[in-house]
Length: 165
Ligand SMILES: Cc1cc2nc3c(=O)[nH]c(=O)nc-3n(C[C@H](O)[C@H](O)[C@H](O)COP(=O)(O)O)c2cc1C
Image 1 (cartoon, helix red, strand yellow):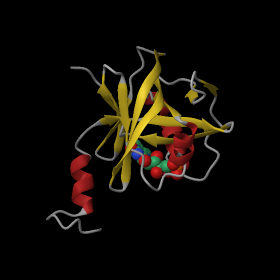
Image 2 (tube, rainbow, N blue to C red):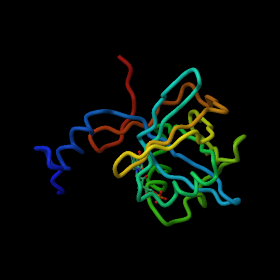
Image 3 (cartoon, protein in one colour):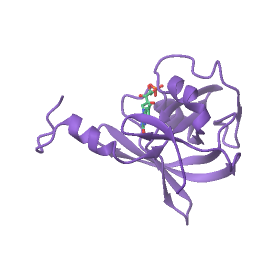
Image 4 (cartoon, rainbow, N blue to C red):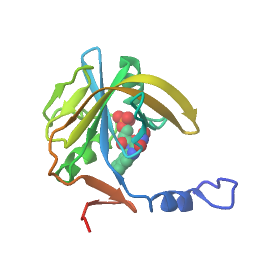
């Protein structure tokens, strides 16, 4: 494992970050009629006014450059019943859209069937961040499609579902 030169190695860093539970989204876009997308946990709300969200695409992502070039992206929030979609969209170099239904949103970016919510954005800015970038999106459309479905969660390298107190 790579030494980060800071007294901890990459495995410790990954394990520590894994203590922070997140949801899972599929970031999608459409360039020249071709849909693109990848699984991500780095989605966050940034600003209410103006309405901005953030996403950290890895620099090795093959889908992000296509999404970036399209100028827009859609964040599809996965429900706990959609781990199979995550498994496919976490792979590179395959036709990820073949087995899932979707429709274009207002930006043209794919909205996947069955997601619990989606957030459509225009790409506002992209900032360098080591082996990732931080993409800032200005929201154009939002929709909750299933307010009752539990979200897909990712925690300590495993998937699970939310349980309220
Ligand atoms: C739970 C989970 C969270 C992930 N989060 C991110 C992320 O925030 N940013 C990212 O670039 N990749 C993330 N990935 C990895 C990408 O989904 C994966 O590298 C994918 O193969 C990229 O596909 P692409 O080459 O088509 O872009 C995540 C994967 C999983 C399973």
